[in-house]
Image 1 (cartoon, rainbow, N blue to C red):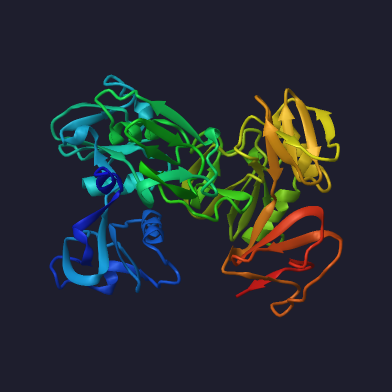
Image 2 (cartoon, rainbow, N blue to C red; image 1 turned 120 degrees about the horizontal axis):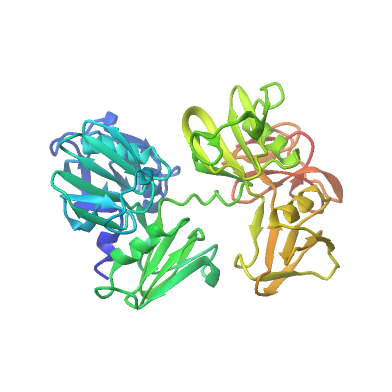
Length: 485
């Protein structure tokens, strides 16, 4: 599939394979040009790409069995040198709208140029305009005018463009090949996880024949798009995280942006990247003291403590954390926007996970669940959060069922089955082994306990579960929690 070589935002330089990245000439390489990661930190090419796409100012990567280099040289990678064991790729997430310069961006059609579509500023170059885009979580692309140095950072989908001299319109398309992309079919958590509710299928709707670009446009136009699967017969736009792939001839699987495999494990999910983002209401300037409760560092001096307080606070749906303050957000509509603020994190609480394919599923168990009549799914979730031993809910036609044991699901139109997973990563979670009251407290405990507890996974991720649940396992530890390598 020839399109597989050009659909990825990472493009080979001088062939890519067997080439070492260089600066101004073939001998120009300096440690200041890149960030180096050891192979145990970034073990695969896919992980190296993901690290680049999440790094500000990344211009490309050099990858080998010896490690991953994230190139941030302002002028980018201008040359390469022969080196059999290395691969050099340029990161190019911006693509010309219409395929040519001299075009001005538009929204739904050629007349849609409303001021609300973009944020305008004056910057010295198109590179600076691209940097503004990367700093804007909702960025869909840029429109740069060489004559006026005007930079428009578009925050809605760019679906059209018009001819305009001295103006360049570029879509932001950070598509990354999943597991190589070519001859791979997108999947969820495993190779058999392909629920129809994960994606929207567009069959035989091409305006000029099968087109990967048109498939990309459908992804860009869909809020929450996580990637796509393209064949000559159809385009699947995924709104569920693409965690794995399966072999399928003729398919191309692309993720939209990088995927963090740990993002689905912690109950708190980063809003617009989380780091250096302050929580806001309906827009980036909507902030009111009634939206949150402020807690000082004496009670919430760590991110984990801030998360724990939110879990225990009725109506809390998000947190904003810094070293000086923990904000427990209880705004009825939650956090809908963020603002760039250094040293602050904004995280949304999402402890409920859709069960067996997200929608139109009915929970079932051997024991009879508790039932109540509620108006909304959020009210049903709140009942579960306040219940002892809750493991999940089923919501349908204002009827809420709260489950306290194991359950499965069956198809049922209009029904919503969700599991309750209030896990919080301890000390960052990654590369941490769980311990009890001290770093040396690693004794197995058997029996029933009714306490706050820690559940630890063989993968080396440590979680703190802030819910009173009965468990019996030799991998559950209690009391004050410390995790160590």
